[in-house]
Image 1: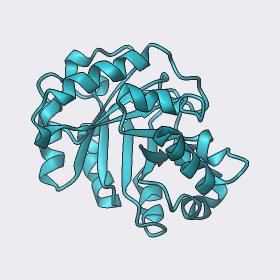
Image 2: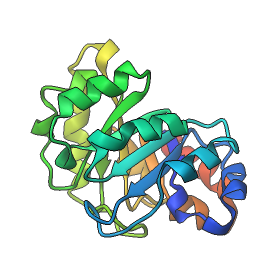
Image 3: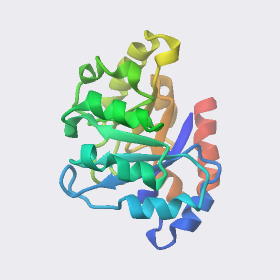
Image 4: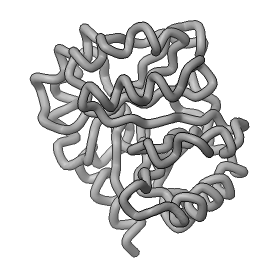
Length: 218
């Protein structure tokens, strides 16, 4: 299981220290919210560019925005490794995928809890990641929506039927805890986004990351 801590749950007054504390993570999840597609407002390319010099971990910018097709290049210049777009907010998905891949950046597609998997049918082999939202996007600290567990399993079966060279990873975002991560892993996820489960852990971030991985390996 790969662990991608979301800095949305970190102390924004000292993000450099927050990145140092998750050095044993697999990548950093950057929740970009515009106040339109989702009700909350977070940060954009300038902050991401400033964070880039504090860690060598891969950056996944999860764009919960309505204008991804006009601003995605700003995030590439800021130093992200992957751009994850919401299928619900993109008008010309094929064009955006190809433009991003042409820039040498990985592509992920995010689906809200009620968005059906059928929207991925034409583009799935082009993707590096599918991000299944297990909460309604916009705020941290929400509880995992139970029916998403079946959605993970169904997507796992679909992806396993693809040629091995074109299989994207499955990531799960929202309400991930030590109590449910093993079940999420068994359902077929390759990665989880963890916010408070990492940054809110009393024993510290690095210990929390190791513990989450151990729960999936047991």
